[in-house]
Amino acid sequence: MDILVVFTLYLIYGLAFFAIGFSVVFRNYKNSQISISKLLPILAIFGFVHGVHEWSELYLILYQDQFQRSQSIELFKVFKLLFSYLALGAFGWKMLDLFDWRWVKWGKIFIGLLLVAFTLSLVDRFDEQAFTDYINISNNHIRVLFGLGSGLLAGVTMIIYGKQFYDVEHQAASPFVYTGAALIFYGITSGILSSEYGIWVIFLRTMCALATLHFLWKALRVFDRERELQIEAMVHRSFQDEKLKELGELTSAVAHEVKTPLSSAMMSCDLLEKRLPDDENVARQLVRIRSGIERAAHISQEVLNYAHHRKVSFKAVGVRGLCQSSLSLVEYRLSDFDIELDVSKKLQVHGDAIHLEEVLVNILVNAVDASEHTKSISISAYPLGSNVIIELTNRGPAIPEDVIEKVMQPFFTTKPVGKGTGMGLAICRQIMTQHHGELTLHNIENGLMVRLQLPKATQ
Image 1 (cartoon, helix red, strand yellow):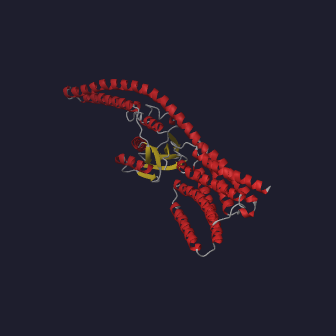
Image 2: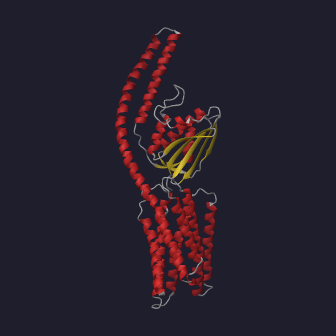
Image 3: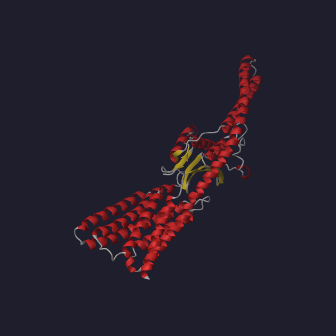
């Protein structure tokens, strides 16, 4: 009866880890913008190797009476256990790179010193102990240091990642957190509790393995949903592109037709200015005519820019560098402004630097116009799940709530007549849509905040 229970537990135990590996391998991460997607193959390696380890342990238990335990077999048992735990530890190690923490570097140094100390201990004890004692002690050290340590490292980083990953679109935070908790419990049962204590230890490890598989499977569904959203977005963009192409061709034709007579009218103004008598009233009227023609020409050019289908070249763009280059372009207007920039150098978004710079410059110009009295603008950025949030805040007047939803519509402006075309934010929103992002305005205490949400570039 005992051997049947052991056989069943080890069979399920190893199968759970194989399933963990296959659940990762059979997901499509090719176009994923979720940062953990690059690290999951390491977790799959852990699953496959640990599954092989547990099934080979079952083989040794079933046929222990049919062969003699040799040194090569004992070494094989130790090294396959070590390799599987190293894979889990490598996953937790790489997970640390996803967090913008100051102490990550020191944490890695500490872990590296532990590995060096363990290696030196293996070498130092090799000639001083009997082979059986050497193997048993090494096996215990591996379970405590690598089994418990790797389980804690991978589990804690997974929990922290899950909490940072919270996104109302994906709703995937909880499964990542629970997966991390299951890995921690597995590290405890595998690293501290010995199978010599009884069959209940194997039972606990099997339950932890199944819990890890269950929650990881639920967590990985985020990639299926991401893929579905990408397909829906592609279909929607294709449909919108057709509509915009037709509208753009019509708008461009109209704008070009308007610009031609406007150019003729401007030339006529130049000729009239030379031939009309030196009369102040006539000159004033001519200036008004010229100003109206120039404004009409400017509006027609803005319409052309809006109707033009921009090609976007996607690549990783540093957010801090993007903000600094945008600030330098409007530096002439910011000489007496108090600028606060709180953006990490590690933050990167997936997009076109030139187009995103145009968005930031446009928003900065609006912020300067709105903050003429307070002279204060702040820019901050932080990661949120699979996105990066950029917030630009000015201390100018708030926008009425009944107007805030209209300001991004073409030709709608809150500026005085003659000082704005109402196309700036409309073009910004169009660029953000092309980047699979979002632009929103929020009234805050003593000011207005513009929030940009863009996909995070995978590391």
